[in-house]
Length: 184
Image (cartoon, rainbow, N blue to C red; front, side, top):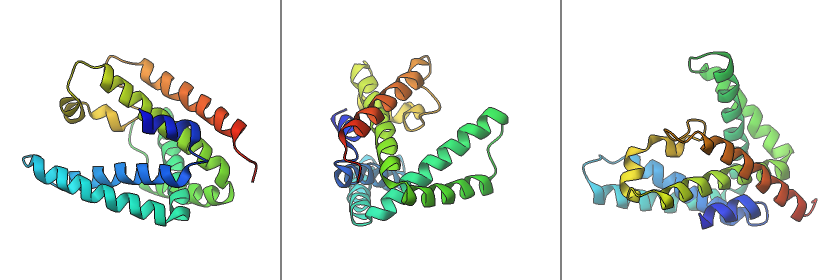
């Protein structure tokens, strides 16, 4: 929750630090997913190695990180818009095109993309952390059985308030960051 709060409310000011946090999380998710589920120690080691590599990659590739944030936001928006129009998955060409346009747009509107991206990513991290802390289910069991954790647009079963809370906290984080960051 602390990392989420830092990301949500000070993501622009501490962007390199935030990139390290998210690089670690994404790298750990990718690294641990490459291991079989039957080896807990293998998943932990692969997660740690992947996390360190992911953190280093995003910190040293600052502009790539900005472009990835823009590409990710554009892909998310493309998915949301397609879900409103059709019940099937969107065509890959649409998502790839949206990601490319988002990456280019992120480089042009860098400050605003960083502010909005970090506010909503941090808000999601805070909500997932809060739900996990408030849950009677142990963290390891929750992480292995609750698929919704990584997907903001698929709220937790029986908890439709999660999507509303994510949007509200993300908007608050955006407003705070825009109010307290310089207009470079």
